[in-house]
Amino acid sequence: MRLRREHPWPRTEAEALAVQEELRPLVRTVPLAGPPRLIAGLDVAYVGAHGAAEDRVAAAVVVLDATTLEPVDRATAVGTAGFPYVPGLFAFRELPVLVRALERLTVDPDVLLCDGQGLAHPRRFGLACHLGVLTGVPTLGVAKTPLLGEWTEPGPGRGATADVHDRGEIVARVVRTQTGVKPVTVSVGHLIDLDDATAVVLGAARRYRLPETTRLADRLCRDVAQGASVARGVPVSSPTGP
Image (cartoon, rainbow, N blue to C red; front, top):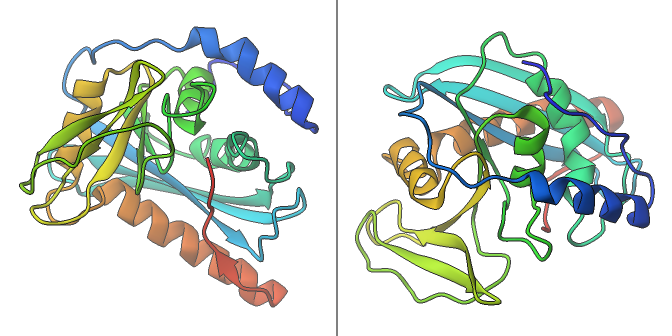
């Protein structure tokens, strides 16, 4: 698949903030046109991450049939973060390598599920928003915990939800994907609304807390990073931060 929109990748915090400011008005929250046929999970792992621009990043994309949850395609890429860790600008460390992996797919997913946030971001432009604007594909964020805002604990059963509020806005939803387990946080990225994003996540999380898209992409990027780490003699780590 190819990007619908591109921009120069920033090297400084000021340049990154300017990119977010430019692209944020392009985000659209709309219902899906219909049930997705192919859903893709995206994730990254780091090889000896220290928060530096020189950190090595392994990205993975796994595409599943939305009905059967069977894998249809997958792609990986390894590269350099190119941007230091700065709270609220985490996407700039991951997107360049994620985009390379996406461009290696042989099919076009209908929905992208990012391991991160969308509108649930201090400037309402998290990783899922950014990726959705660049690709023109409906994109959502599904994270293990909320990044910001206030919410009440949802009921104990699968499918129970509670909206996350921040500064008078609904920015995400905590969703109980399995009875009795800790909920995940779902947020809109681009070209999808919160109800449809919730439905996609629940449809992809039939057996475990995390959607199958996230589980498989996490496993694949870790395997790729492990191979790179063996070659470099450094440990693998998972990303943290908004």
